[in-house]
Length: 128
Image (cartoon, rainbow, N blue to C red):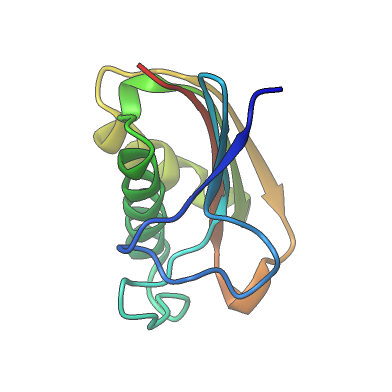
């Protein structure tokens, strides 16, 4: 039976709940939904949407890097955003961060997220 590996990035604060930053099984990496705390644990939830989106994606990429993946290895991403009016900003920042990589993606407008954040992103990647 293939083991499930738990992945933790020192660049992202330790999860407060009962979950791992990511898990890997065979050649797949499953990144848990990421909010936007900084490495030192301070929150960006009081900052504008764009700053939160950049921090969320930085956290996501740090976890992927720990798993040996880059944005080009992301197969699917799901983003939850508070306020459909934030969609264009999210799309722009996401395109900047992912560059030529265009994984399958879903953006889901939601009423609220934990700790007052405006964006959360989860992803599935394939190891190289």
